[in-house]
Length: 140
Image (tube, rainbow, N blue to C red; front, side, top):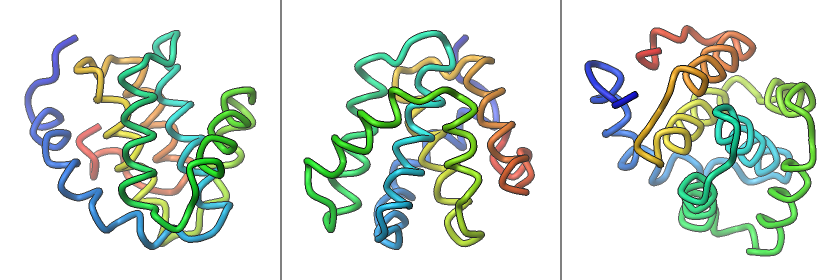
């Protein structure tokens, strides 16, 4: 399903917003939540494809310089082995100030392959609700 309308416009602006936002995520728990949301939304359509993996790695390495490549890779590998329920539980531990950033990162990762489909949107709506955010605030 192609990206269009308000959601498409919203997603196009996410790249610029990521710069700087994730610098506030400085603890290992924040890194785990970020990679968890990346894995969760990335595999929502049945597979975690290479575009989504590359986008997640790019977001982490560019915006979270306080983590080493090994730390990022370790968090990603651990979360890739977890169930969706376990990933939701990790994400739900986000402090209020981090929740918005996580959702924006998840949207950026989910849309990175050019096809932010209904299954990926449904996962992101559920994440929003679990974090007590309104999906409509993110054009979902």
